[in-house]
Length: 231
Image (cartoon, rainbow, N blue to C red; front, top):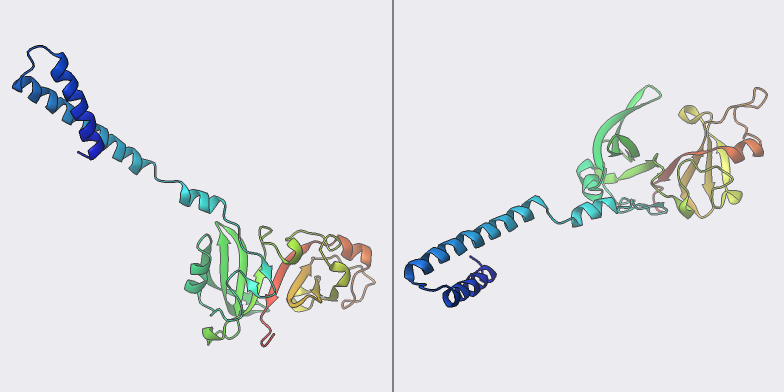
């Protein structure tokens, strides 16, 4: 019995002693036993309620979680000096599910670390050297619109609505990015904005940018951070 329960029991016992005629040892014993049962039951119910209704701090923390933006230095705490290690990435993003996988590009398999929000692919990371994880991460690709890029841009934003797009240096994608347009900002050559896929007009050469009205309406398909060494 804790201090508060003991205090309540003593107060009720004193009231009964003064109010009930013929109150004696047996009566006191009976009342005391009843009070003990009631107070123990109260404590037990309180503890059970507390166990069944844990604090909501963790739930609120998860609900209020906002992923860090992608910027010149990387994505949150993942940057130029982060090893290519799934466990390390998972520790940095506890609100996501991190998986080590292999992806196929141009018929070749490459190791990758993928970050998921439930079943949604949020990001993918590629190594500098698959045989030496300590060399770090070569590329972070953002696929999900919940992650902001420079200026608050998100996946799905049109080229014309992208902050700073008037100063972009753009060029057509090649190989697995054929049909896309890749743009870089003078503010950060580590960030690539990839728009598309864009339908190519039959008379437009493969390595020529689409006209302004077509590119202007193209949607941001993904953001890439590149680990250019020494920058």
